[in-house]
Image (tube, rainbow, N blue to C red):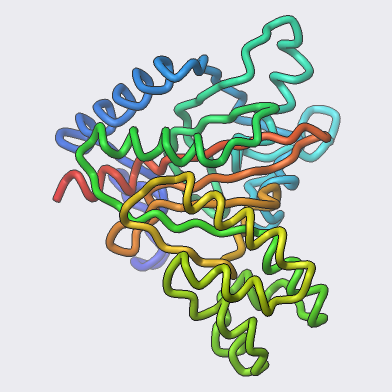
Length: 284
């Protein structure tokens, strides 16, 4: 084996996580803070299996770590928790009236990426403004300031139908290509600076966009968050988010994200807080 290909005894795969000393202490503090707040908000804790048959509903197949079970059915390491949590609760815990669940567990992405997160699902409750409030409370408990970004996935999807565009334009954030179309209302959406402009854009936008724009405005107002950005053309890569969506960012790092979605006909909402991003900021 050549020198460049040697794997030494102390090596860990790229993308995997190691916590010790300060980082381990911060991880415990973050998770304890979240657990206390979520329990006080009426959530119960759930821990789901590492293995799943349904991860393709959440994550692109190319990002999954896949193999076969004993019957040769394809399974994968948990790449996301939301769909599994909703299905387990709806089908296996039917006698329990509890519809608010949280989890503190990692997800795994190809080729060797560990992502530790704190997630919560409001099953049967499409209440994105409440999700924003809870995440803001979690961050405040850690004395962290962040920027709130709100979007509505309905908007880029509707634009694709109106202008016959591929959704990849929005998925990849190709603003230059969007502006090159030279459509006035589309340019104004792309360059939106503040909440007051939404009403002006809605007045000139196609009818199909008026409802989604109004729902985005309602979320922005209901969030009551001072450091707010409205990004109408943002498109989440998570497959199940289909309406209102939000992210908390700081120094170009995504601290949390969530929104409204539907699984098996049940409209719900939820969020994930990214533990490793919080650790990096708190270490500094």
